[in-house]
Image (tube, rainbow, N blue to C red):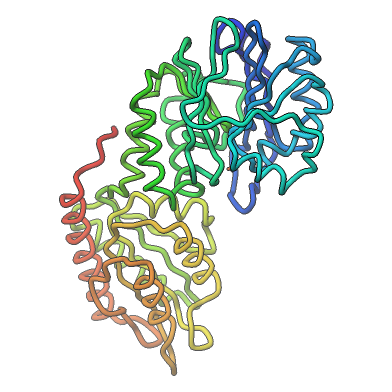
Length: 407
Ligand code: FEO
């Protein structure tokens, strides 16, 4: 665990959250590197706690606060987001901070009332543009609805050019490091990408509005509710969010499949070879040998997707269905795609996949590619050609939408 100084953002502003080293399942998200629930303490003439932590870890947060300040002297608890990974510890925290008012927007007050008995809580309701003076510093509030829940908001501290951004710009990543520049290069961005794909992806339009609001702020540091604080990479993460919110594709093809006796697997490998030969980066994913978390992260930035399933009981295989259900909910856009798969005495697998690709609004470049029982040489040639065709269409889509600006 970092010492106090490692947790210090500025004189009088400290991280007081919890590092969850062992969590591997965050409501279905595979948190391979663990997670953090970040909370911050701002001490001035008035003292404000920004967010809390998951309920079991409220005691750790309170101990960190007590090491810095008399808990009875905390004036405000700002609630940027009511989801239980940040507000779950609120009842225990408020019980230990007798003076603290709960600072949140009207929707958050309502959401907190749905989660907890808030009858005795002293609320100070704020809206976009409101300011809360703390002494030499002040807090300013900006509503960011649907990033990630309806009541979400940012808290900005202009004197330090510091944005407390709750889920936005976060990463699931346990570390003793508190800042992006303390990690190996690229790691914070890679985990931010996974986080965006699995949590924020459906809300691109709202993210774009939030980025427009953020563009009016002078930002030197972004302190999210998960993972490390952006200090060196502020411009990079803002640019990455702009690309992701615009669903700007990269010249990549993802081939995902489930298979029974490897016929659909052989097709998948031939499609991958064909796509790679046509000038894109292609990757192959057996849906039972990867995670949904990883798969949607790959799909998010790909311009082309080939999705395959063998036929089982006149439909697709169950894990193919699970993967497509997850993808459909997250609504990745701007994809060229086609369905493929094998069948025996009755069709159904590739056709069922094709119906979901259509529902997602992806551009289907061809009819489902089917093989009866076992792909022969001619079938595999057709698979390679379909992969090439997908790659060509993917490259055209990238040109239409413009190459992502981030390195
Ligand atoms: Fe980290 Fe939407 O909660």
